[in-house]
Image (cartoon, rainbow, N blue to C red; front, side):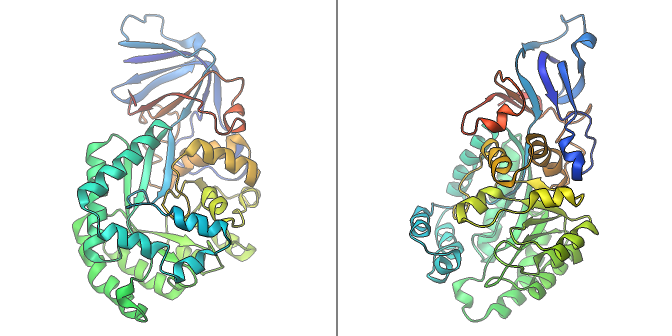
Length: 410
């Protein structure tokens, strides 16, 4: 057993296994001057120091966390971290004024990533993704969803999903995998309908039968896949055991929210464009909004209306969207600061969104995302800080002392 004692603030306590919504997102339950016990990789006990076990000879390790805070480790529910190469040329193009759609029309964007990925071996993809994920773990991420989608061929999508499986097998972090229908490949130029038919008739049965994907996702957006096409793909994917997710309303009111709600998707992700009707649909559903503010920053888009979602009684997750084209970062602490500064949410609300709500958006809230007895000991131990708000206030400063994943220090 391990004992962490004299914790200045133990935060995210007793959240249970449910999505936290509305004004409750700011009620991040905390214990001042606390202790926490880890046993066999799980949270065994915690409470105020007045209740700390007196006989400490039974503990294999004792950590004095005076002046430090403990938070649940991050749950990043939207990433694309299996990719080949980088796209800094497009980054410069964006600085020079080209729009996302213009870059895609010139053969850049997702199609460029597909070319690179299809020319990269499975081993090379695995080692590059493993390095990225290990860096994320050191920044406090203990649970992550990883999407395919950068090949658009059946062989390449299976290759990406096998890489994700290898990551699951080699690292202690919780991983959920998603088959993403991302774009139409060049080989189907002017034949998108045929590509959608092939996805439904060939890709999904093969991927579903392999057991490699937990979820199916579609980029429902103008110039990519329509609402009707998204519905067809998601309906088929769910018949093969993959629960729905949707890239929804990133650039336009694309119908993605309607598709997500209709297909009972676990999450609708992006939501930079969101109107009252769409908010109403989300309120009447169990679909979790997942907001990706680093992508909005990188593409200079309108930020998702986080405060309005809270005011309307909705809960949401925050995730990095880690990918080479529009959010080349898996840095959750930086994302939390950005969410507070640009979307005007409180630090407590951001932490709730990045922990228990992120876990809920991956069907993991019963295992992680909060400080609850019996949950995995996935913890962020901060450096000494004057207050919890300092964590998001001092953006860019590395305030993480140690990260525990299933009880072990990373």
